[in-house]
Length: 395
Image 1 (cartoon, rainbow, N blue to C red):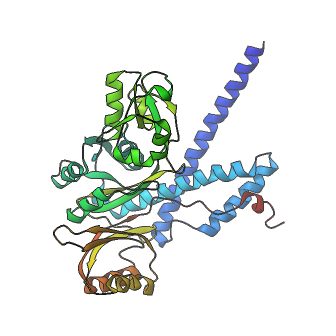
Image 2: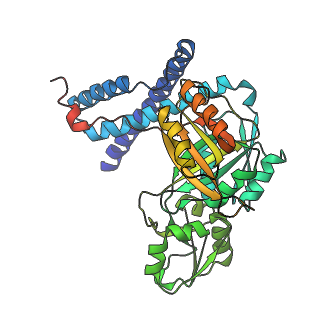
Image 3: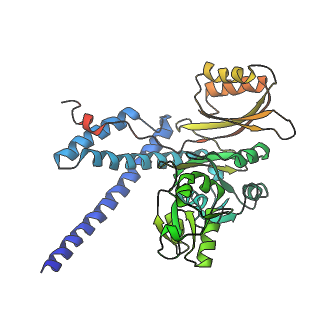
């Protein structure tokens, strides 16, 4: 009797879930119509005031039917983020009609299961056309695939919240003619992956990418006397553990990637910083046009004249034009001892007046200057509405 009652309840939940999916799909269609209107009337994608009003109303309505305000806030943050990214993707496609390909050939580090593989899947899920994955063993090989037209795009990790900038990628950007056309931030959750369930203390050899070892140095110190063996990618590390099928070896990688190699996670959240994210850039042979309605970022590379205060003078140009710099990275110039090449990430569209003016000024005062790319900002900051405070607004 109880079994029949449970089955009826489960059937009702399934029917409700199906209704929810149809409603969410209908909402997505409406947001695409909103995007068309914004294109026609040159309206920005995001309207923070509208989003805040929406969340306040939904929180109050949710409380009236017994829903927790924090749950409603979290749910609609996800829905709003998806709506913004879909609108940005549509606007970008309309602005670059010739860039839409029936097949996207994408080069990335490692094979299936690597973090670059997971980032590639995430980024191109919103792009039209099929995805052809091209795994590579080095950053130089990734760049070469696109430069030789064997790939249309490359996905490259550029920095991590725990281990910092990936210098080898910055050095590759210094010499390539490719353009940055996109970015994404992907959460990194390192797990200890093994073939069979074993105690971490029995592990004698550990395989991972050098960046992963750097990000998990505290865990390695606690693990004790274990031999660490660097690999070209996390997927290469997982493949080795899969092939060895030994109870004394393990890899560090994502739990999702480990499943592709029949590995199980016996410990997770291994990184020194628990909020561990990697930022990836997407590069291609040709630059893209970013509609002015879409939040954009522009990356440049420059070397200043060798005089005192030259870099400060260059950065003052950004301040004078009210340009926000989000990243400044320096790398040595090969063959020029003690001289540096500077990489700058700036908020703004290269076709917008203030940034255009700043770039023109910088070209005239630096020894070398190049725009590496102008591209949409993929990270959608949540609308700042405190769920508790929202309930008292307007009362």
